[in-house]
Length: 329
Image 1: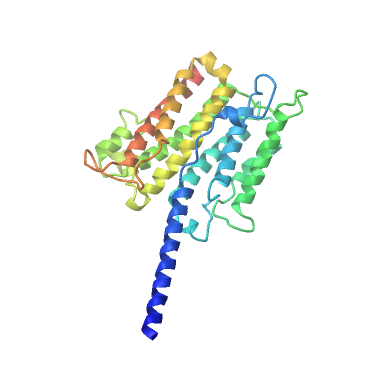
Image 2 (image 1 turned 30 degrees about the horizontal axis):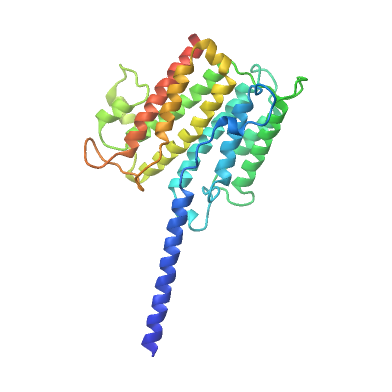
């Protein structure tokens, strides 16, 4: 009798554990699926005629922030309970998207919303920049999500003031020099991520080939010493961080096409922006593999890091060309 009771108890515990494991794995798969892309025109507020410059850029940044907080599972970077605490790929994706969001808000504060370096900062944009700078690992008192909500609200107030025709509201200066300064930030981010991706395998030839914007006369030995190999246990984190940054940047560049249309027309730069968008779509394409593979050379196992690194290298080269065209073209 006692053995029968013990056996039933073990079976119940095993069944409960199995059900819990299946539930956690199912939630992990659902929560860590990359959010669907959106069209910039879909997030613009209703307006009569052409959208006010800056509306597309600000609306896109707002949508990126809302996606981070409202996607399935919510914001997972600061989770302390299962299954979120056991996931690392999704928080890495969030980290990349948050990085792109912070860069865009910082450029909006320092460049796009100011006529010159001596002009006053827009208070709403300043508040948004401060809120999004909050530690993403904070889970209470206050939680990161609460601070980011305040940042989104500040951006919405700024967007509302852009339509003020009396000149007392917010401003957005869609100038070539402002855009070039923002592209300089993007170039450095992509360069860093591309270097970490390309050093996921111990192959100096591949690393040298995929190094973004590497000067032809740069010493290879010195560069190899300055770029340590990405540890095997960080390869998937770097991959998903890059995916998150690319996903957010894809939408931001679409918004730039709208707000900087006249500037891009004057510089004949639409072809470069189209190339950037095309390669960013390639970097964020749906994956058929459930895990990140780290094969080498022409082996039978794929290398996802080098695949996305090839796209990032092309994006970075196009960003550099666009920046030069805006400054000198």
